[in-house]
Image (cartoon, rainbow, N blue to C red; front, side, top):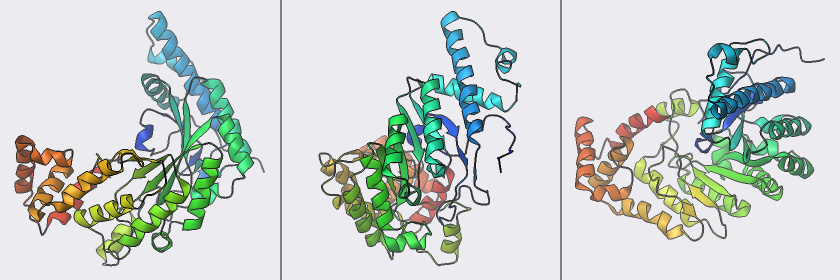
Length: 384
């Protein structure tokens, strides 16, 4: 039976990777088809659905209309009124004004990248994905990168030929939330994939010639599985050799099921020092790969952990080693300074002015070495 869903205008989903901040967001699916991960607050209570392909293509056409109008106005010096822009769309749908905002942001960012939403766009039929990709390339031929989230469980089921066709149609980066390579941790947080599937999916993406970003979540195993989380994830990534390894330190969002488990005493969340030790162990056990490690999220304690393996290994280890060698009160000053944005990196502790700002925050929040982790956890809630 044909899908009779009525087109209601341009759509955008709620999230995208930080690295896609300047990307045009094109929504292919709504929400997440799995939606059981206990650490994730996104999409909870929301039903998954695939958007009709014709609706996605219409979204692309609408953005292209606006982009063309914006670029023409820039070149000619004409003024673009709201009324004039509204007339560009077929029915002047108010929802298409969201497409206008997307077009302005896309043009301002240089029109270099497009991100396909929501949480697992690759679950649609490969033929449909290829059709969308070709339409995007026709609409925006100068785009350099088209990317998407993808679950390992889904990618493992896509044929190598279809992945290669997607690559040829323009899909050149996939973001996979591995989170952990430990089967115990993956089962505990209801990830819906095991280590073997994570490795298989990663290798398939690489084989197709598509750039691969894998995400690792320090702290996800709690205290009991911290070492295993680090070692097994490093081992999985060593087998894959992804283009990017992106760090996402565990935080506990208010609506995540894992947060409730923590409150009930069923999850032993680690503090800043223990998490730093796990991160160090993880990095020390990455061997034989050429991945770029990115600490590109505000929740990470060490943004300076950024470099290319194996060349930059020691440079990335140093800030963590320096932190772990500090006395507890100095670790406290750094953590509070970092979580309140008074300090940016471990070397800022040596700056008397910046250190003074961090000390002031410690005083204002009544922080001690004993309650430091409770305070930093509360501060991190602001950035989830």
